[in-house]
Length: 135
Image 1 (cartoon, helix red, strand yellow):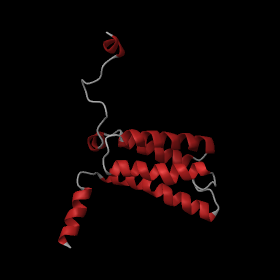
Image 2: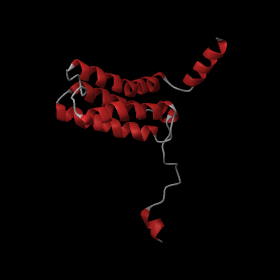
Image 3: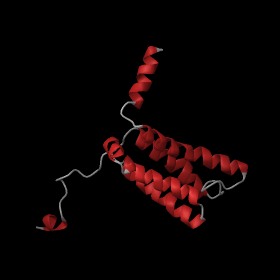
Image 4: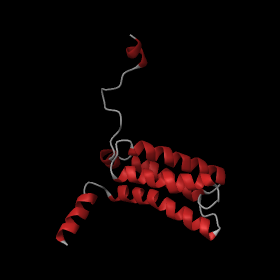
């Protein structure tokens, strides 16, 4: 039992609570889509019988959550892409709650604490300009 607790603490080590919440947000997307579909109602951006919703929320949403959980080097970028898509869908659907949640998640990923957990893909001093490549 002691080993179980140690392993669990090691898994959570180095993750601020907001990182865990954002991961849960992505993992819950699949369950919310299935629940809304089976209930026959549209809940937030979930629930329409379109195959597109199942691909987005049952496929990509948990995948982004997994990338964030394992701290993949492209996790933050994947989260930005998904959350931007969520904002666009919310604007088109006229539902302000998913838009607010996605915008808050993007702003949270911009904090120094989250940038430490999920560092940038670009290293300072490693970028080349197009002019340097052509010369």
